[in-house]
Amino acid sequence: MGFLSIILILTSFAAFGTSFQKVGVETQIKEADGIVIGHYLKSKSVMLENGKVATQMVFQLKKEFGLQSEFYGINEVIVHFPGGTYQGLTTLVHGVPKFVVGEQIALLTKSIDNRYWGLNLGYGTFKVINYGKDIILVNSLFPEDPKVGQVRLEDFEKTVRAIKGENLKVVKNTQYIPSIDNQRTPASVIQGKNRTIASKNVHEDNRGESSSLNIFWLVGFLAFIGGVFRMIRQNQSH
View (spheres, one colour):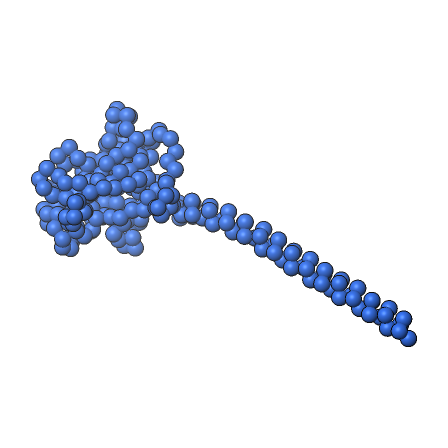
């Protein structure tokens, strides 16, 4: 029985803590039916045929293994996680990851009943982070764990090739531009906007300083002219 199946049995979609046995990334790759690297787009909760609530998370594919995206002509994938809120019914499952719209994610999936499920909940998901010259996968649940918390993307892909026998396939699709309407946006977008705003503010501040200096010299000039006229009047009175 796979690790994911054990997790699902332990949780049974119930609202209590989930215990994780820490295993290496290699073990999870061996068990995974699909591996996805892409941008998180959106999610919604649904009611399954068995009456359980689950959350569908949609990812735009950048790289994949095992999904046969070229064969099916897909560039987005739906991955299910247990729990969620559906028509007022809330089921909480600890360990389910949370993502920000537009951020890049790597996750391992398991095919169960013709659906892709997130393998090992948040333990099988990683945030893709640029760290200097390296691209690092940071675990969603244990980001600082020296054994399972961080792995270089290059090493991750090498492990996929060694275990699965082929590389992650690059999915050819249009560049995803995350929506910023009522959503948090990726750091790159936020920083870009901030740089634009900061640049604009600098120009406005410079214009403000220039205007203050002009007013200062104008007032000084008028005071000087006034003094000259007073001296002329005093001389005339004498």
